Length: 175
Image (cartoon, rainbow, N blue to C red; front, side, top):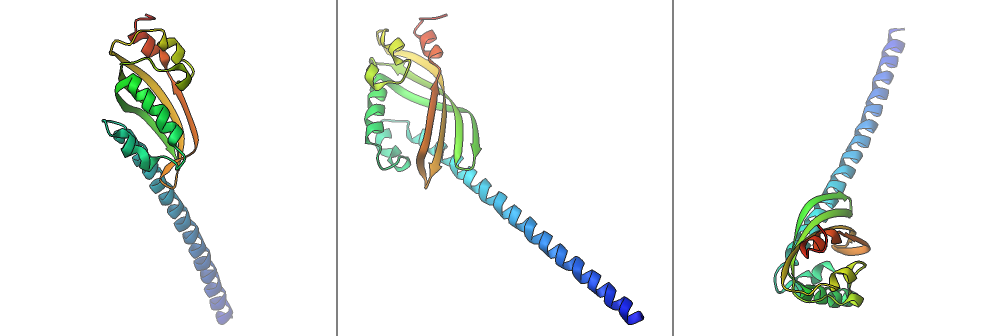
């Protein structure tokens, strides 16, 4: 009888050890998954900070190539025209939310209105600004970007909202 009781206790303890080991493995897998996501999110955050930093200065068009997909000639052409119109471009991150490889970033933008931005090159709303004569006026506005990062470059997902109200206020079109 003692042997049967001892065998039973050993079997219960062994069963508990197996359950404990399985739970530990699940916990370790969950921690590893969390750490991988945190690393991806840190990379995404570093990516956009680097991109925005490299957008500054006169050699922006060569510095940002490492962030862009291979087929970015049209973007570079359009952004070159934008930068000719809006000189001294600078951006500051106001808020950023990162979920893995996807990011939403709220930016404060400043630039000088140095030349009329051709309407056919611009986004919706630029036609309102084209009515004002460029006099190197200082402008500020907010933008919100949504994008993903794939293999260290901008991915297929991209969207932008631009607050033209700030620009129109600086041009004294609205008060």
